[in-house]
Image (tube, rainbow, N blue to C red; front, side, top):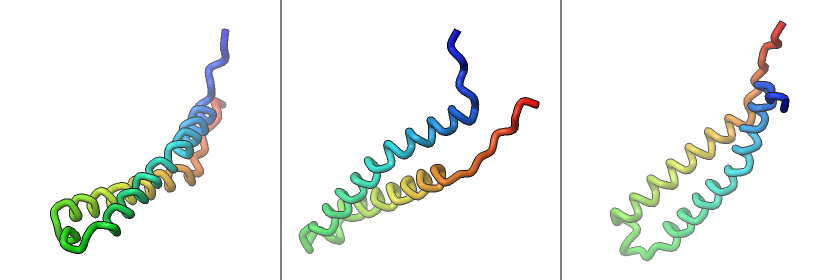
Length: 80
């Protein structure tokens, strides 16, 4: 019968998964920043520009939250 992973092992696995997906969020943010920066002047005050800026802010928050999660020093108590 296979051994059930410990809580600590499951936590470490989840952290590894976060570290694997975090670069995708960073890449998406960079793409949107580039789109916004290269937008023609006559569209820089448009609704689309505002939507891009909002999406960039939200991605920045997600990236910060992921970064915080990967630097968490969580200690699980032993069984006894």
